Length: 126
Image (tube, rainbow, N blue to C red; front, side, top):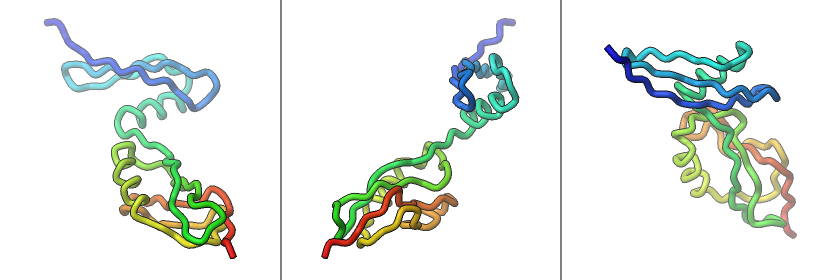
C-alpha cells in the first residue's frame, strides 16, 4: 500500500550553516526530520513544526514623550498563533513618559509568561 506523506521544509536559523530540514508526516501521523547536521537543528525543527514561537517587536503609544511611539518587544518568544492577540492588547495601551530601556511595560501579557519591554529610553517633554 502506498503511504502518502506531507512535507514541510524548515530552514534552521540556529547557526550559520542554515540547514534545510524536511519534516515528513506520514499517513500513520508519525513525523520524521531529515537534513539537520546537529542536535540543535533537530530541536529547532521540532519546535518550529509542533509549536512555532516568535519574539514580537512593535511600537506602543506614549503620552508626554519626546516621540509619540516607543519601540517594544517581548522578553521571550511567544506562540506564533498568539501574535495578533498580543498586538491587539498592546494597541489598547497608552503609557506616559519617561520610560527607560528594559522597563516592563506590560507584565505577563495575556497570561503567556512574556513581558512587553521597552527597547529604548524615551524622555518626557516638559
